[in-house]
Length: 236
Figure (cartoon, rainbow, N blue to C red):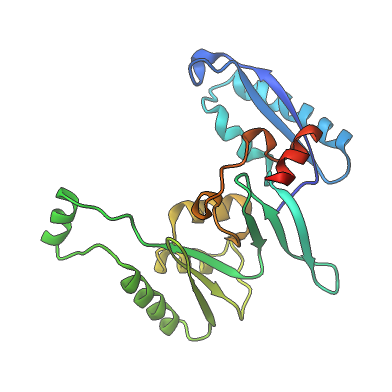
């Protein structure tokens, strides 16, 4: 779970024929919790690393951002124990929702698959399989808890399904136990990948803006934003 207070970016020319057509530059970010100058130094180091990758067989400019190791979200609040151990971080993501990030509480997103029709459903029915529903997913969650009575589950209904918390025991997000729970609960695959990449569990605490009648925030106001966009973002 790595977050940074200071960010700096450097635009690096790239060969557009090797990447997305028409793209002439890649954005390389540097991060630090010490100072803006240190973030700049980190960005410069990463530019040199990027150039080495660019000149080798590296063929996906977008994936380079994952090697940064930091989550590029605005830190709103940190939660620490009495002995100063970091327990959780409250951030705001790129579309403006508040997100809890923690290594202390197991969290899984379990979504109801989008409704499918036509040939796919007919093929499933031939093999005696039906499309999972909210009720069958909840039954599965209950079954997993019954198979693991040492865990205390708290389950919340979400827009797309359920969010499952285990509240009586800390489970390392990289552990085999976490992997098994994700699998048996049928946790959302993208969510599992995100937890792995960011070394923590995540739970969005506020709605996606478009679901409550709000416009999407101006991309120019995304964190880390320039001073002139701060007022615009605060107004949003």
